[in-house]
Picture 1 (cartoon, rainbow, N blue to C red):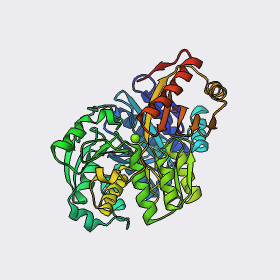
Picture 2: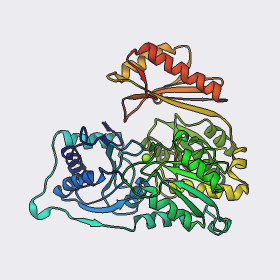
Picture 3: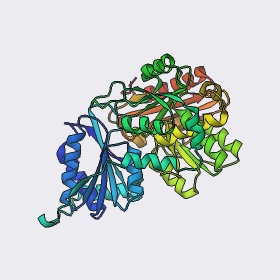
Length: 453
Ligand code: MG
């Protein structure tokens, strides 16, 4: 599947060496040659994808700097801080083992936007790839210091009171899903004086749990937090841009709350606009209101949030899936940034995480997805618009229905043949009722729909 963030497919089916090489060559041409920084997550198909992509990049004369197995934010930061003309992450993020993908970054280390992605696709589709003669083929160099650079960049931010954090000796359990955060997060925590209890922090090539850091998949980490009397637990997705948090009682606080904690901290230190997508919790509206700053909501997707952050000179932004974006480090979702913010917030509150959460706005979110094959996006949305014609509607992305006691949103995914339904209410009961209402509407309007859960 081709989307604004890159191309994604099942290896051996959609994502073949031919497709990978063609896109990498098109991207190298799009960049106009020069230096391209690449890295990958831990999945077993990464080596094949890497080699196929390198062939394409070298064939158009790019010199490649390969960071090896590193998180996506590490690549974004490396591109942003260098003179590279672009970057590629070989990762299918939260998708399971059989998937892989190429995520493309422009010279400033942020995802390609819609216009740039169209330009790239046109180069590929019209085969306007500039293969260079034999004497101009690029070369590959390896750089192993990117994770260290990433850690230093986060620790340099003056918001973090490093001596106090280090003195506190947090005990932190980490579940890196045997993904690209296996090195970054334990090392980062060690530099913050934490004792690290590792769960799924060795590289195996396969993911030991569902790779999305959702509460239902984090049982091992929750148990570890309890058994080892940790102050908190941290869970990543395979490319370590998303961060989910477990409290000291072993309870997931919900991935929506990662950004809520981070935003409240940043707005206290450096007040400024807050940017998030239309699906994120309304707790963020409360946080922005308390801080007296505007909140802007965009379509779902890192690039939409980042573009708006640039426009409004945001202090902080991100997405409710555990993605914290802090312009003080770089404009991409970053689990190391999120981690430092949570520890700093706990230092300032001087209490346990479970106590701390009692001071946060308390809403309940529910999420599900419905698989629908072969539908037309515009027809689907038009049908939903008319089905919910008596409701307050927000059409920023898909359709969001806003009610007195909460909201629900039905959004066709950009990366999978599914409709995502998100809902938020005052408690589980009302959130579940909204989910049911959205599901029933879709099933009524589209009989081919099936539950994907
Ligand atoms: Mg990810």
